[in-house]
Image (tube, rainbow, N blue to C red):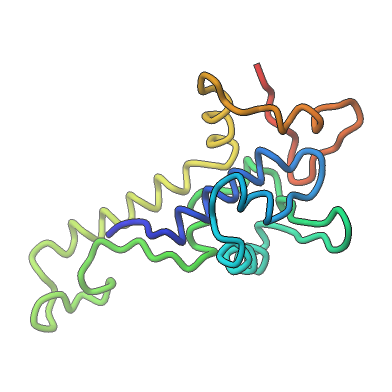
Length: 163
């Protein structure tokens, strides 16, 4: 029971997109370079994120990806589910056939843990992750400076306030 690379990378890439999408579409090459995630892997993940309507793609010169809705309305659970990440602490995948085709003694414990994990991930939004990142000492905000120029409009939600 752990979040695999797929889920971790998807959340990291979406956080990067939220941080850097204020001036317009963000390229996967840019995310790949900043986060050290394979470009081909990002292409697969963003295909799934787009199908789940978490991101929009923009074609052509200056194209890339934008958030499809405000970052305050995208939870970590939305992202994890979009990339088909299964968080399951049970041995049976919830089928209740854990031990010799019957429910094991601790099935309810692990099933409740699954529920609590999703409740927590549902409670954390991209806005929360961006805010936490920007409030860290020495947080990288130089990429946001151009995006905050007067008249710049962020798709998918306003840029976070920078102290």
